[in-house]
Length: 331
Image 1 (tube, rainbow, N blue to C red):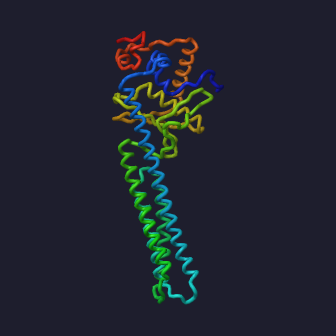
Image 2: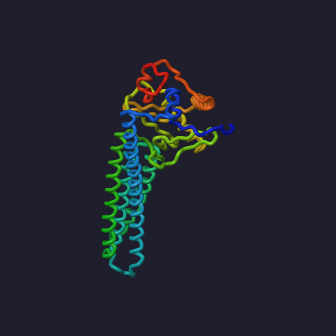
Image 3: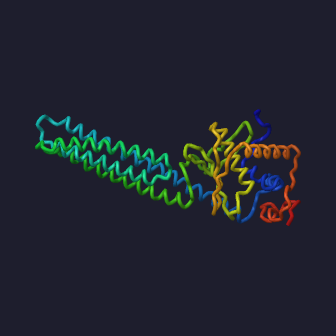
């Protein structure tokens, strides 16, 4: 499809136009006013901060998990290196060293087993289970070798004991940090119904998604990766309608189109969240066709230099933030 002529149209303007073309037209010159708008802006900032805390918590927990893994590797290397550096006949209890290493790996395996049982995503659980298997196998191998050395009458080197204690203190810290952070993040995710891995948050100078082909731009509230799919999420505050509103569906479809243009892969759906309900809006060819038709209507209105009310619903006018300056309002 050739590039669309004209200026960029934002997904937010598309939502306004879908609500009422005249309201959108008036928004070009008159800023919306009202307590609901102010509250909506405040809620948006609050959501951004919460999402940032969740994203930061996920990254901190992941970092701690990596540290647990590498501490187990380093501890094993320390034990082997300690054995190699000692002179022949030195008083070292090899079985004790190998037994300690086995316990270390069992501790790590237990930790990742806990993570596997608490993971919400199936893909995450599989990764944790693979890690558990690796740790458990190593622990068993080391433990078997430790038993083989049980009848050797030697003592453990003091430096190795000191390093083992340091490792245990450090490992305990990272285990605690990961579990504590995971608990905080889980609480926030449950409260704000946040799924998947957060890939993008609309905060301040965050990037604007753009499509040069359709001259469309927008910033979804946030974007997640869920079961291998990139999914836009739009949060709507205020009252919860009986079903998803058409204007909100089109705004979300615009974000789906922008992600499709950005990544080359169309999202199977987008998430539209109200305070009391959440809707999974399928992104398909029919919805995309309606979206492009509305963009065409908006460009035609700009060409003509006018737009008019397209409904006979007093309720829409009553809740419109531009009703005071609207020449066609019904109430």
